[in-house]
Length: 96
Image (cartoon, rainbow, N blue to C red; front, side, top):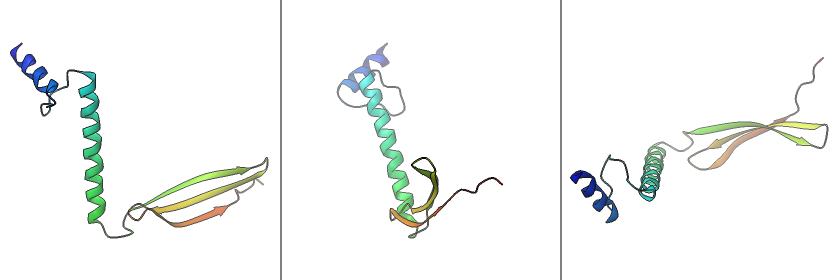
């Protein structure tokens, strides 16, 4: 009981104990946001250490224009520079 009271007092004063669970929904939300912030900071540090154009990401999607125009769009992005490295469009193959 004493530990619970001490933890509650610490949380009410704005200090959340290290790995223990928060007692109020507000403190749970704060812990979640702190964890997300730490994750973003770690990823940011990793990207800073890599040379330019070292981390790329790709996506393929289709674009429908009207009833019969369907195109596929492929894009490659540089995650560090936040730029498009390359892209290509094509029409899908028809069945024979």
